[in-house]
Image 1 (cartoon, one colour):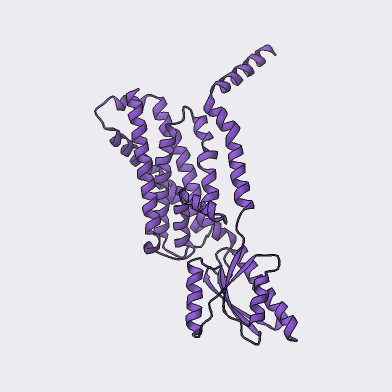
Image 2 (cartoon, rainbow, N blue to C red):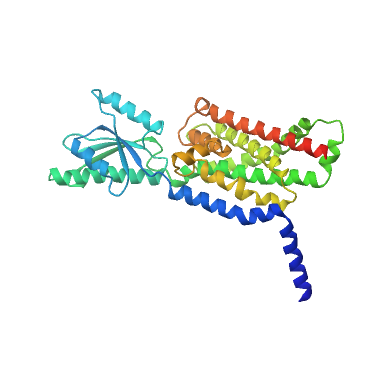
Length: 356
């Protein structure tokens, strides 16, 4: 029993002197919980619905929203075709969530909808139909079943599943997480084994070391990227409207970004255990800020500084919206920019290690 107590006290004493580990143990859970609570409880659930043409009493009923916050935006003008075009463009640019056109007799409704998020699409459709039902009840002897609804999906379809929406983002998140962890632990092993120190004593330049490691680890990252992408798309049957080659390109660049970040963070860790402890600080906040959840303007602005935001955004543009390089080039450029920045951090850390 004494030997067990001695061993237990020795472990506690080691942890007590490891300030970095103690800080992560004590403060990381609090930071993550605060982040999750702030994002999920402060999310903006106001739905913006465009009205192309509708009687005033229907618009009034729609704005009430039945326990759901609804903002009605008027797209009506003299040209019906132009109004429809403007509303659809607003859906594509995410200025509104949906649009509706209702004739004066309230006999039918044309709904224009982004169907990529099935839960949101169903809720908005229910809001539109409920408003029409309540308006009919007040004005005409016609039941809701007698009204006709024609739904035009700007993105997605009636058969789109929830996993199609989240699957696009999850591909990038999974690749980012595993490449970050594997690259960080392996590069940390190179430091701890003395291999890196031996290379630093040779004429090889620090930048050449970083580039060499990035290229070497990129082979593994490329294999993992292909496996994950092919599995999600062809085995799990996640919808890909755009080119699969763009999906592979985005995921490969995401893997390189995670690789360079993992290598940089490994310079702050002294063991594999500490490397794993960085996950709550580095990975989890990015998952909540990358656009996977509805965010308030403040959190959305903070998400602009998160690398995963641009990977998830680009994947959704290709997989869910069918867009090409003209719509994702800026996201790709930012991803490359983050990768270059993390490589510079690696060079800086190697400079400090050489000077020790």
